[in-house]
Image 1 (cartoon, rainbow, N blue to C red):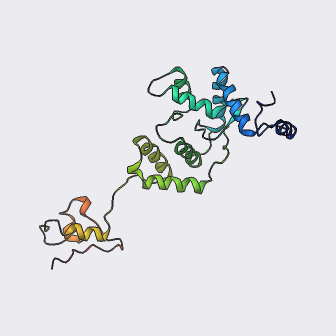
Image 2 (image 1 turned 60 degrees about the vertical axis):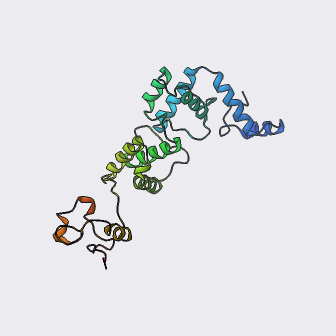
Length: 227
């Protein structure tokens, strides 16, 4: 059917005919989305299998029409149906992509897959998808996620740690106390047993790990004036 063909694959003559009829691209996409819901789930699942085999994931965030199936709309409906309960369809989709239905934004998962494929290489027979970021963009995103580890959900932390390990970095997040904050905090602390402050060689062994520090300039921290 003329209307059901993909907007990307549609012949210029077809687009001209639709324009003459006053049918907009958005109306075509909405029609195809409704038509997809009426089709056999088995056909939609076949399209999902083909997409996962081609790109290595099911994090479909943009309008994606394949063989008359609006894959993004179909997956969104499948996520709503499987919310809070296991389904046979959910099990099949999990076999294609274990993170097809993440509890965090789908755009985050799509970026994770981009970074994953850049670091580990594309699996055999897979291809990059449209709008995929380059290597530098993916690594910049990964560093940003590592820096905000405490704000991520546990599953996101685990996935980020996997990629940081692939980069050769240990994904250990440790808070730091800047010099000004340290001087303010130190006034509230008890005087150390040795009479010196953390940062000096003699005192470091007597202080807990969080208090053993150096200034941001790299030199040992000095105690604040108590006068």
